[in-house]
Image 1 (spheres, rainbow, N blue to C red):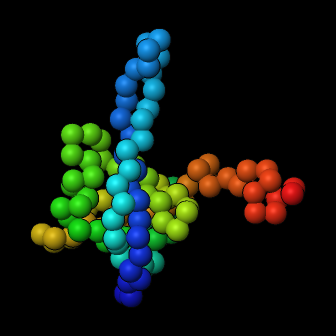
Image 2 (image 1 turned 90 degrees about the vertical axis):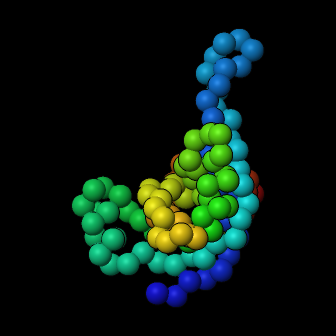
Length: 120
């Protein structure tokens, strides 16, 4: 499987309260280098049976991945080339790397009116 080197941003969310006592979520992001590839056939069809449609796989350095959520929750989203993906699965492949399986996150990638020629 061929990997394409790229930059990605892992995004984790922490839960807290605002001044009025309402629950609020704060995003914490970490920029890092990664290697992106397509999802293999077996993993793709197994995920479809579970109702998940994976679109890509990225490999990141283990120390960067673990540092990205030190003292908070693991990352839930990844941003690559301006598109947001949901992290469906993350597992350590060896001592130095984590592999993250991503699915397209439609609600985070909505083009607002007036952007990129839409109703301009």
